[in-house]
Image (cartoon, rainbow, N blue to C red):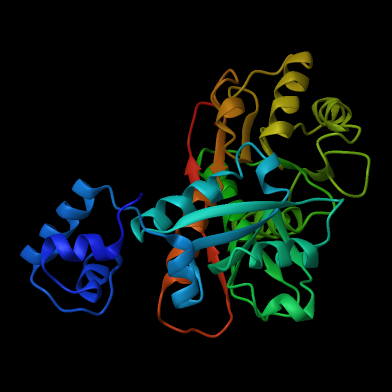
Length: 332
């Protein structure tokens, strides 16, 4: 039989309430010496917290539930879960995720998450977008991660795509580049915001873009859509005023740009500098030369989300934009 709170209390010569306070952070007052002695006795007896019983008493389990909107299928967006988990463990909480995809609707996944009686629920998306939560469930979601709620009823943590594009464009300008093209991600909120930041940086420098072009033929970017990168690069390099820098919508696009520039006989960065977004390390560090790119704040979003979910401070719903980090490598 597993040791119980009463077993620990009997061995320590204290009340069950005191043991609970020492092991679970309750309100019982005690000296640090007593707290440490109780924890040592609990460890010697092999006491394990009965989470189910604890959940019945306080109405929730020490869990953060995540509705993962295709998140766990993305090799780099899983940094959100890592950030959440690290901060949750510090607070002696655990994180579990349930995947939302085309075969399951938001309401059913949220209801499934609620059955576990988590302390808090987060909604995390694979990419920056706007999400319409069912009205009946909006109050159950404590925070939106990498996305925003359509009506503004839920606090949202999103990447600051516009500022990231402004910063990387300024980096290209500082490196002396003046003829800059942008091969962007059509139909995505991130692409729209990045184009805004790109244009703002060039406007402030008094420079017009060489061109802003979609990376794929379809109206909404996916990495499976027919690519237009090769066609764009061939046209740009054959123009009377060819670019001396190309900003790419993401690292996958940059990988295609590298190949197309080499086919055109252009050297990176001697002839054309290349900048990008995402910092998919398995791509960015293996390109030759390694790629300068803006790292998404995924892990920071997860960490901040956990801290906000577990905070006792009540703040009104708002949107918080987290900065990217410029990872400067040899492509600029």
